[in-house]
Image 1 (cartoon, one colour):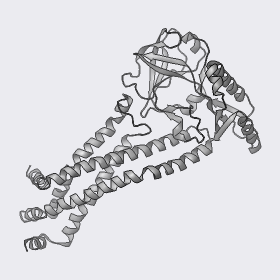
Image 2 (tube, rainbow, N blue to C red):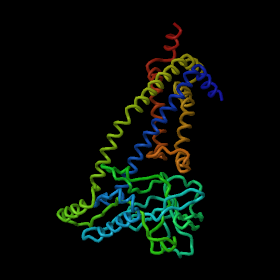
Image 3 (spheres, rainbow, N blue to C red):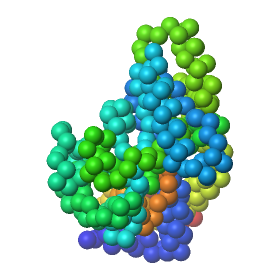
Image 4 (cartoon, helix red, strand yellow):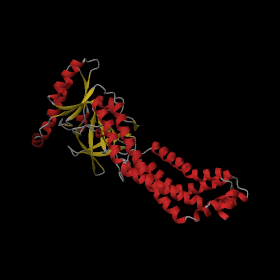
Length: 407
């Protein structure tokens, strides 16, 4: 209790500076957190693609007439589906990874797109889930439809819930059984991007979606027609062991259907783009961050100097040098505590906040790694700010400091 009073008394001597230090440190930590989250997302998206085991593949973007799409949407979708079925039958083609839909489901007045996952998609892009990815065997049509929830906005639903939804095409109620929820950050594969340059972070989406498994009884269960809505883009995976000539012939044939990017090109472009993106984004946050750091160092130096006389008196009253430095450290720790708690609470609750769709920073991943990095930064900063006091303590005895301050 006595030591707490000493620390509190030392802080009262720099009330204004301590408050300013808290504000600056809070801003600096939030800038640091955002940068960590951005880098974590870039690494997350690239790692997800690298672990998909589709090294021998291309991202194909079919050439589609948008005017024809506007006039006959379902006819165009059917043509796209037939094209991919034809490509899948080519010699040398192992499988096609595509995403398609039969409409949407309305739950509690909100429409959610329903995406159909086939075996190839599940094999390569089944993210970690709470629960599991669908039952091992198809369930009978009189039982609720097994689903997995992906993206944000599903905080009110839990694994095992049986929901009543309204299917958009028939307007009829249908029972859904939540087998799993994609774990934070909740991203699922997206094939809707047709940019000139394709990067790993273009291929993920955190939009709320209902995922169902492709099975023979799906259409009869939904009581709907086979009018499919399919992305014009897909991953085309080649057979292993193809010669360069065979692969070149396949690429030439695919080029007649549209444009494509090889898997290797996407990974390489993603790495280069992420580095360039950081170079563009980093200057302003780093300027603010180092400005804040300079302010922190100045105010902490003021804190040390203002309390130098008190430290000498503590020494004459029986405090060791180690304990005097400890009192200084505790004072700085009390200044660090409110900003650190605010920042860490934000990181810890951000997954819940984003899942509830209250605040979504998009393309930012904040998790336990972010907490560890922020705590490491604070520990290093605390040690660095104590260096002046440590250096003064080693170079001068308390008696020398007392004489110098008394003269």
